[in-house]
Structure formats: structure tokens, C-alpha cells
Amino acid sequence: MNGLDIVFGVVGLLVGLVVAFIYIKTFSQNLIARSRAESEQLKENAVKEAQNKAKEIELSAKQQQMKLKENFERDLESSRNELRTLEQRLSKREDTLDRKLDTLSVKEKHLDDLEEKLSKREKTAAAKELQLDQMLKEQRDRLIQISNISADQAKEMLLRRIEDECRGEAGAIVQRITEQTQEEAKEKSRQIIIQAIQRYASEQTSDHTVSTVTIPSDDMKGRVIGREGRNIRSFEKATGVDVIIDDTPGVVVVSCFDPVRREVARISLERLVQDGRIHPARIEEIVATVSKEMEEELLKIGKEAIQEANLPNLPKPLVPMLGRLAYRTSYGQNVLRHSIEVAYLTQVMADELGLDGTLARRAGLLHDIGKAMDHEQEGGHPQIGMEFLRKFNESEAVLNACLAHHGDVPSTTPYTPLVMAADAISASRPGARRESLERYIKRLRELEDLATTFDGVRQAYAIQAGREVRVIVDAKLVDDKVSAKIARDIAKKIENEMTYPGEIKVTVMREVRSIEYAR
Image 1 (cartoon, rainbow, N blue to C red):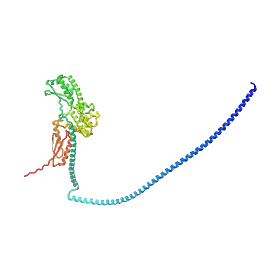
Image 2: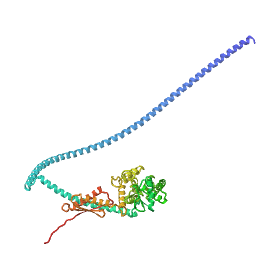
Image 3: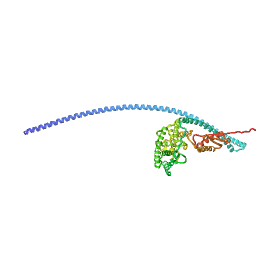
Image 4: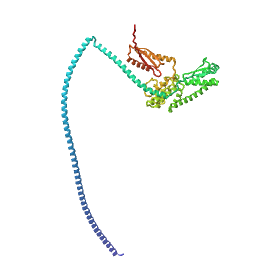
């Protein structure tokens, strides 16, 4: 390649560059002009669109303003209507108040007139009262002058007369109310008790606990005593009883306050006599065997009693205690049979009165449970039994029936009086209990002495085995009405101070004798 070609090449390149530059510049100017035209067009379109949007917003605002104006005018009209209604009501109330004020003014004027009249009447009444007091004083002075007695003496005579009349009327009222109440109560209670007794029929004979052992010969007595008394001492030590061997042929007496231990001793002695081998070791063996058998027997008797009384949910420690009652007697009456009888009678009466028969039967069965432990603990059997039952969370009805069935403490449930009534029925029926002659005579004397402590009573006689006391009063000191009060007071005092089975009838007799002689 020569130099000329290079020059032409450079020139051609420069020309190409110039042409390209011109073309690019022209294209750029056209592009800029077209962009400016498009932007102007967009600007005009945006302005037009903004103007249209502004017109639309202005139109919408005017429409909203029209709606708000219409709503405001409608609410304003409603408020105006309510105000007109309130104004009408207020106007009516003002008219009513005006009429009431007129009426009150008339009444006030009328009251003023009445007050003036009352004031005049009070003045007139005061004057008349003074005049009346003066007249009464004059009449009182004249009455004292005529009767020759003072005012205090007349008052005392009048009070004494009124007191006598009131005492007589009070006696008559007490007699009438008492008779009526007693008739109604006796009739109702008689029906309930008779029905209970009829539904429960038990044997009429009482159990007799015999603590004697038959000995085949007098030689056997010597073997029971043993050499220098060692056998009898061992037997008494093992059983806790006293063995009495006297001159009575063929009999050995076992003595002990605890009936269960006495029964264990009796059975043990019988077995020793039958066996013939009587020595300290054999005695201890027999007594241990019989004691174990007795525990089983007590459990068996208790379960049978629970089954008979239909109380299967009793706590287990109570079962042997009920069995111990089978060997306990009260005036010759078996305590367990007595408790079962009281349970049934209490249930029958409770059913008649609409009470819980099961709870009543439970209270009746357990009311004497303390007698199974009173030989081992100090205190009365009601308190001992109540404390024992409380350990097993017995109900208040059962606890109160156990504690209060002898009337030592007040009754807190209706079941306690039923248990007391059933206890009295069971104890007082014919053949239920035996009483010693000395105790019987002492009770009759106490009954007669108690009746003679009242004023106006001349004599008192206990009859019908202590079931009735007949009181003879002085006819000069006591009238018919007061005699009724004396009979009631004697009965109340007997209830509070004496212990007796069943009930005691108090009969007050007032005799008036008129005697004349024909000559």
C-alpha cells in the first residue's frame, strides 16, 4: 500500500465520521422535537383531565352539600316538632299545677278553720276536766266520810277482790285448756302408741341371768378349791370373778358385775367340772379358749341383732358391743332384746309422724349402747354411749337420743322423744321388768311425801302399784278451781323430781260434808 491510498483512506474515514455525526445530530434533533411534542401533548391531556376531575369533584361536593342540607332541614323540623310537643305538655302541666295550687289553698284554709275549732275544744275539755277532777275529789271525800275507810284501805280491798277473782278465773282457764289439750294429745298419742304396740308383739317374760354352776358332788367342790385354795385363786385371777362356795349342796356361785366375764367364768367352770382335770395350767387354758369363743359369740349375736333390726351399715366396732348387751340386764330385762324392741317401736311411731324410720330405728337400737361399757368406765351409760358413738361420726339424732333418753339433758331432735316413749313402753309393759320390794316401797313413800308438800293437801295415797296417787285436799282452804291447779302442779313436780316407768295419774279429791242431827 502506498501513501496515497493511506491518505484516501483517512479522508474517507473523516468524511464517514462527518456524515455519521451529521446524521446522528439530525436524528437527535428530530427525536428531541418529537419528545417535546409528546410531552406537550401529555401536559395538555393532563391539564384537561385535571380540569375534568376538578369539575367532577366540585359537582360531587355540591350534591353532598345538598344532601347534608336536606338532612339538616329534616332533623331541624323533627326537633321543632318535639319542642312543640314538649311545650304543649308543659302547658298542660302548668294548668294542672295551677288547679292543684288552688285546691291546696282551699284545704289549707279549711285546716286553719279546723285548728281553730280544735283549739277551742281543747280549752273547753281542759275546763271540763278540771271540773270533773273537782267533782271526783268531792265524791271521794264524801265516800271516805260515809264508809269510814281510807283510800289505801279501799284500794287494798279492791285489789284483793280482783286477785281472788283472777285466781279463780285463771284456775278455770288452766283447767279447761289443760283438759282440752290433754284430751287431744292423749287421743293422738294413744293411737300412735297402740298401733306401734300392736305391730310389735314380743314375749312377756323377762330373762333371768343365773350365775350358778351345778357340782355333781361335794368332793368336786374341794377339787375346785384346790390345795390351799390355789385352784380357786387361779380361776378368780384368770376370769376376774368371785367364786362363792358355801354349804349349799351341788351349787357353786359365780359373782361379778361384768356379765360377760361372769358368763365366761360360768362356762369355764362347767367345762372344768366336766373334764375333771382342775389345776392352774388347765384353768388358764380353758379360760383362754372360752374367752375366744365368747368373742366370736358376741360378734355372732351382734350380727344377728343388726340383721333383725335391718341396719346393715353399722360400724364394725359396734357389733360386739351389741352382742355384750345380750348378757346385760336391767331390772331383769335383757338389754339387747329391749334395744331391738325400742328400735322397732321408735320406727313405727316415726313412720306415723312422717319422720325417717331408718334413722329412728338406728337411734332406738343404739340408745342403751353405753350399758355394754358402764362396768368398765366411770359415768352413766347415756354419757358413755354418746361419747362412744361420737367416735364413729354418728348423726346428731342418734347422739342426742343416746344422751337424753332419760330426760337428763334437753332434746334437740324429734327422734329423742320417740326413743323416750318407746323406752317407756318397752320397760313398763307387763312382765318386762322386776323391781325389788325395798325400791318399790321407797318409790311409793316418795310419791306420797311429794304430794303432801302442797298447801291445802291433807292426805295422799299411792295406789295401783304406784301408777296413781290420790290426793285429798281441805275443802275449806281449796275450792274446785284451785284443786285443778294443785293436780297439775303435783304432776309437774313428780315429772321433775322422780324417776318412774310409764305414767302416774294424779287425782285430787275435794269432799264437802254437811252434817245435821235430828232430835
